[in-house]
Image (cartoon, rainbow, N blue to C red; front, side):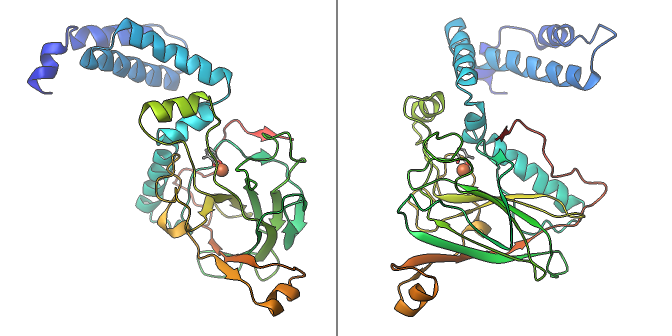
Length: 313
Ligand code: MBD
Ligand code: FE
């Protein structure tokens, strides 16, 4: 602690410790021990921060009001990635796997708040768009394999992404149910493929609490264009990841810290008339090859099936 800090501290740390103990029910017999431990720590850390930074009462209540509003508009799931905490949870999981000697396979990255459970299931391949969005046609294809490189048959590739306005179905009532959302089961050779439209990046809504926070920090509130995936198969760890679209102006400044170097596949632009015709199209299209490697279920390392609030339709 610097001299300056210690001059500003006006409450003895032993007083904070005693208060936090009582706040967390440490002197009471009942309750949930794990919850008590967490509340004890967070309460004490908050009190220390107030003292170190000399947070005023006005500032404190502005923070409480901000969180209440963000909760009311259902934006906490945007703020958590916006302050890098969702990515931080991924970094901790990566490190736990590394220490357990586990080959994680394809890099994970954040789920984000816009998944909807229960998308239509298709075998091998699917079309994700309903044809009403005249965006660039995009074909994505690849293979799911295990740590030994052998293909995984019957894996489920659960894919979701935004439309050309950066909006997600379900959260955007102008789109049909499950638009740009599918579950695709891999074939015997582990392959999957889908046709869709090139997504645009997502921006926090105008006037939203999440955008307000980012702009008050001097940051922007934009994500680069991306496509989300869960890849699951019996006997394997669930992979939660995304691919980013190369060339996006926000590729390396994602407000949600989701971009990772291994998750930026090349986008092939195809304008050859024969290939266009072979795809049943009349205009150039884009294509991405992306393979997934998934890790085997393992004991002694925390699982990757995360319980969190999710929309379902
Ligand atoms: C998104 O589309 C997203 O993926 C995340 C993590 C946050 C906000 C919007
Ligand atoms: Fe997203």
